[in-house]
Image (cartoon, rainbow over all chains, first blue to last red; front, top):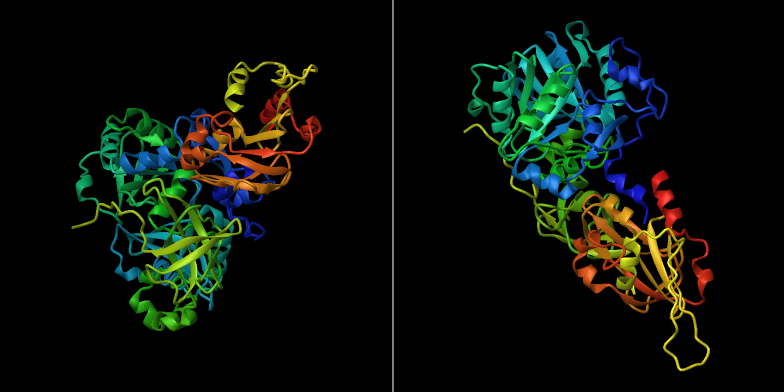
Length: 423
Length: 161
């Protein structure tokens, strides 16, 4: 038994660490990129995790909590599904793109139609490589004003993303009208689960926020809450678990106090810490991709089942990286050679790397994520298969430890999404 | 055998290994000594070897079970399968990971724990007792487990790990 393997699911993709990035003054991400190898960065909540006795693991250059004592991974997962959990996601990279050319610049990097956003709303998007439309990273774009965007990208892609942005900005015609900054003094907390609204409301009241109504704050929206004791909070309704919840961007100086308050002052079905372990199983049940596993530089958003994030106007007009490939795939499924799909696996769980076998015995793809689902009590997985084998109900096999296990292509999400959507 | 060992293990006897001797139930005038040796691997398996019957019982350690978390699936070899020292013979899967079980000894599987296979979650409760995995008929005696760690050495190893 090799215990080192227990960390495999939490390991960060390391293939991009070698990329060099120019130094920018005052940017935590850049500064840390030049730190000696092996020295892990710490989020503003690091001490709280250690105090709580969390099992800390290296993840995307940070020392991050994977599980907390007194809660097995399954218990932690279920607590988020039924009550509320608090995740420290401060390792993720928060950006601002401001200026009259911020929108066209982001539209150069992504296939999103950002003119469809209204101030205070967000969308999932992807940075794309020129021509190939391989995914550089997935991200969330929030329009604060038509000339001011708040963007969150993956920690594991930080160096690559920043190089990609800098490179493209340098050659962008309207570069004088774009100001890109990385927010280095804010933590990011994700409060997730059906009781999140209750706990956030109580928290905001304790912090001295006035005149807010969370009942009129919907999934995909973002609001600024002014508090007396916690400063200004940039809060987005959504998350990475499939549950209702909030992502709270908060100044690092008050972030530990806020986390403690949420954990200790919450009453009914209290808020508990949740780590990377539960984050991974929750997002997989919700059918969401993890970059470096389910998405990478060689995968297009259409292959990845993310066609919906390509704006219709963008598909027609182009003008973004990867348009050459995407416009063809957009109009003709025959040009899409492989598809990301979900599976239910019988018997042994099929995990990342397991080969997918057709009834004729041919290898037609690979599993990219898989785990036993705590909610369903079945093994779930996602992966890529050759087009034609992607329809729900198709029976295939996954090769695990030399033996073929039955796979059934299954629609995702595996669990019902529990978002608080605008009626 | 495992259930006999359990109370002894709980006491965490400082003895380097558990050595229980008793006269074999034999009418032979020369009493034979039966030894039960418990050893540990660096890969966190345990093995008890009954030197009189040459049957080795194999499982994963408490340390391993704690590190894995909730076990949801156990894959064991079939009876009569051959297992080879340091080669995987099965796997234990928790929600977060799959871990191969490497056999500490070579031999033929004579029994597998079907109860634990059917109820994998019970493995976490008693991995070094009721949660044994397979029994293997080995050829040879004490020398078979020679290179493995005794209990105190294993405990020290886990602390450094």
